[in-house]
Image 1 (cartoon, rainbow, N blue to C red):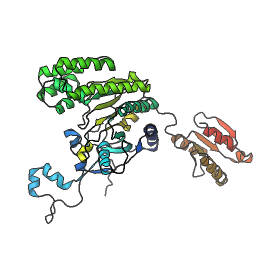
Image 2 (image 1 turned 90 degrees about the horizontal axis):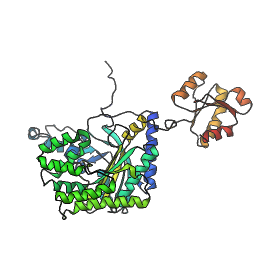
Image 3 (image 1 turned 60 degrees about the horizontal axis):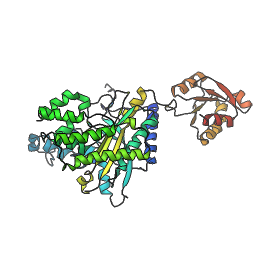
Image 4 (image 1 turned 135 degrees about the vertical axis):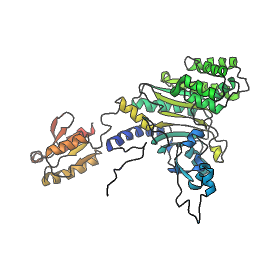
Length: 468
């Protein structure tokens, strides 16, 4: 009998210790930033009922949901869940009978479900962050996986645009702390996009327009023009669209020019959402100025930003790293109607998410991980023989009590083998406690990076390691 070679599902990955340590470095910076801004941690189940997930991400999103089969024999003749008529009708009849649950697609919809279910227990405005994996049945490619982590921060129960301004601040702080200084935080407003739709004369549908605009950076102007034409938009409407999308200048200049362009294009004053969108963006800009935000060169009012998810209703965000060929590493927006889908209308929310996998790839490509980011053990105690092992154990305890990650090589082996072990694990220090060192009550601390050795007392060893 042949043994099948093990494998993992396409679009998923194993993470070795060195990678996990680096990922935790990213998680740590994001977590500390979220908590600094007053967000509390939350976790929700891996599985959600499909009734919770479907209809929240648009048609394309629904197609990317991983459905989980119910247990049991669906075609059992005695008690069949699926009948011959169902099979003849197709998947729309079969699916509800064989799959009631799905893997979560993102963290925002489960959060909205949580808010509705626990509305009598939480204090509004409710600020939470969540760091958990999500799953999408997407086509795997660089920077896009079927299983990946998201790091979300959301506020619900307030309409204040201070929340939008603080999203920009958190995005900027995380990216700057990670060393990703060459980034662009893009911001737009769904009301602005709605006004642009009105300026086109009502051809096609808003969803078709937003979906096409959202693909602009992927398929280019020609591809968007072709898609819009196929969906019923005239050449004149498409020309008007790109005239509006092409408004240039700095943040404040774009707001002023777009307002003038709306008037020219016939966007009527009764389009409250469109003009409110410009006012909201202006207020976010003012709040950042009042805060003393000093990174405006990295903030861009991008009229072409659409964000494909259908639940956004206000400001929307997206982040790109400029010196890496990578999709967005963060995105989000305001969603006034999301909890309404679960029976709790009138609760506005806004949030965003970091994609850790993409951040990791950017940091790796730009060599921005700190040298010690992959270090799990700071000091290895060499093991020569039974005597050195006995002498090392109390020292090992004292190092750990001092907060130093340390380990004793578990076997008495040749020093060369222990050196190789330390090198392979990127352990920066090796402590040698041979008979000569023990005779004078000291240890020889070897810096594995430089080869330098020092004969030190234990307190000096601790001071050296803590000082790293």
